[in-house]
Length: 268
Ligand code: NAP
Image (cartoon, rainbow, N blue to C red; front, side, top):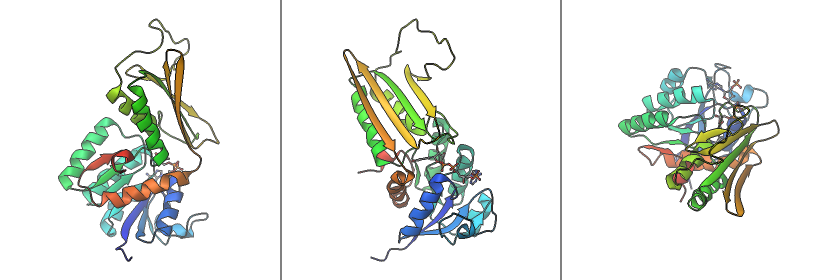
């Protein structure tokens, strides 16, 4: 079947996630990489940089320039929290649908960007985790939280990650808080003898962030009840685990006219 190619600008193509996404775009018949947005290598082609996938896409370092010079349908952004927010705003300004894997967006960011996507009648997706297994872990955690209000989230990531806690941990906590009766966990007189020992606190739930070389992206959601514990765990062993979700988000963004936050909202 011949499909009109979806024209993609890829931001962050030299990064760990970006390299996988570049490979996905190169291997997907109906995807076409029309440009790369970076903060280095202006005017070079991605394929000419050592170790990069063979994508004949020109690199731009100015977001306004790339969006005005190149006709594109979708921006895939896998950069940093600060750059991702700027790129997303600009993409919407120029009528390009953003598919954002970059984490670190706050509730206020999401609210503002939803308004903007709706004003522009453009599809946009922010997915803090593109791995289908991670989405199921979040859904199962939400199911369990109805019966176990005592919960601790332990997320573990590689030590190059900039934001903590992870977007997935925050999203998990939000999903749990929709069904969990609010409760301060632990002993009522509990004190921290060392700052941060009990992790971050969201409505009495605790979130712990581990950063170590050798890790990719892992999360455990631990529930405790009288005489029992329940642990729901997901491991991304490599970054290929995220690519089916990226592909689904790119394809789905074309049929949306608002911002969708979370892969679970586009999975059937
Ligand atoms: P990474 O390896 O550090 O890659 C980030 C890339 O973005 C690098 O090539 C970096 O270049 C580039 N970059 C930095 N600032 C930029 C800017 N202003 N404009 C354009 N490019 C810029 O990080 P990663 O592990 O690939 O992760 C990228 C993002 O995806 C992070 O926010 C991470 O939390 C998120 N993530 C999401 C998922 C998901 O499923 N949604 C999964 C894993 C990771 P330099 O290295 O030269 O600075």
